[in-house]
Length: 224
Image (cartoon, rainbow, N blue to C red):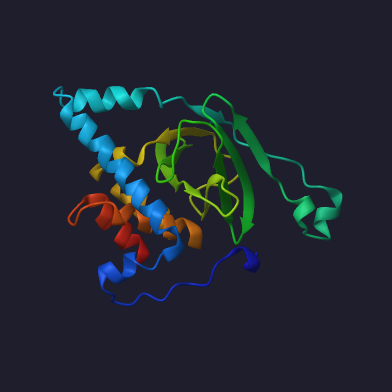
């Protein structure tokens, strides 16, 4: 439905630093802290003296997977006459080991809304919830960046055409520091289907990355 969609963004040439600075200045402290955490993780891996294997080992502990089956429901009789929030399909799953609450719901105009909230100790702002989608023999992924909302909850949300209510999904956590060149296409797509708060969160991630970093470039591509 129209109310679920944000207005189309006008694509204009802009200075990259100005583009990245558009996030609410009230979250500068969070931006700095998130950037520092990412840098510290990368440096810790480099100091270990064991190369990439140390980084992989540190990530393994966070690779628990939450499986969400495709969901179909019979529409309520009243839904044929009146489309209200109460009549829409909403799928919710909670995984306490992963510390994730996952919600999938229709968002109108053949789109699906994915909302996630982290309530455990595994994730911090700037980390990513990875939604793996299986479409027959093909596999794709959606990325949902986590940020602290005005209630203090660690949350994230996207509205996307990439899936419906019926696909089987696998949900996992990905540290922000683990994003690299293999994720650039997914990062750009994630920025484009994020709402305002999510785009600001991606800006904060980009501001913590050096010029020339492929993830930073992918975020900028999604913002323009």
